[in-house]
Image (spheres, rainbow, N blue to C red):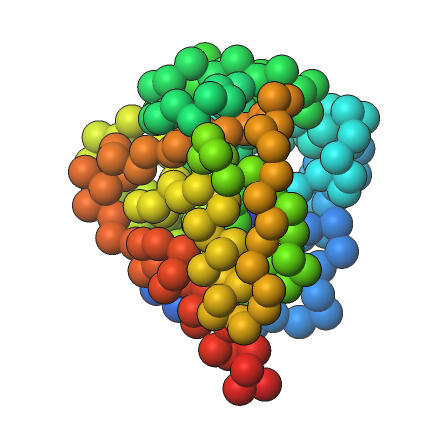
Amino acid sequence: MANILIVGCGDLGTRLAHVLSDKGHQVTGLKRHPPAHDSRIRYVAADIASDIGLGALDTDFDQLFFIVTPDERTESDYRAIYEAGLHHLLAKLPQCPWIFVSSTGVYAQSQGEWVDDDSPAEPEAVTNRLIRQAEKQLIELNPDNIIVRFSGIYGPGRESLLRMAAQSPVIQKEPPYFTNRIHQLDCVGVLDFLLEQRLKGRKLENCYLASDDDPAPLWDVISWLAERMHCAPPVAKAVDQDAAMNKRCSNRRLRDLGYQFRYPDYKKGYAELIDKDRLG
């Protein structure tokens, strides 16, 4: 069994920690404000941006998962995490292999193109450029480090498209404006799966795009959700010439490695969310 460090124990990090602990791994969670008690996780209270508390952290980990979300979508908050935080962790744990959670926001493609793990990633927004810079730094330091780029995460507590569908929104219908998603349980599943493959000695690539099988037009998704929730349908609007982030994400590399999605498309994942909400 492995000695695992999870940096950033929010919802995804905590879910992953519990899965790994239940499999017999020793799990340490690094969090600014740990919970009072969790029998499956050993917590260290630390702030990677300021380096406060990192002195108490062990250095003998077999694997580090980086699953950190900045407090706000500002340049300063992203620099605190992806520059200062990264620097402090690498100084503390220079030899530890990483699995770094990134975002498909690092792709600037906006014309409905297909993108995969090897597509050019040259983002325009400064926040995404900082994430991309961190990706490059980690791979340059150790080509065996792994980048996992998640698309739009949904699930309990992450229900923005359900709220949108309930309001009969005005959205683009033609040409299609694509949306890419991954259920939060598949986020945990992908990270757990990649660790399993690494521990088995399997040679892994240094980047995996993690999104479900069905990049779909936003119009189709919202129309289906509205019908399922018995709400008024969306209203078509003129083409948004300034639309950004319009791309289709391919998960072929992850699929070829053997990962099987629990929620391969939006209908399966959102139907479960809607049904649970109806049942209270």
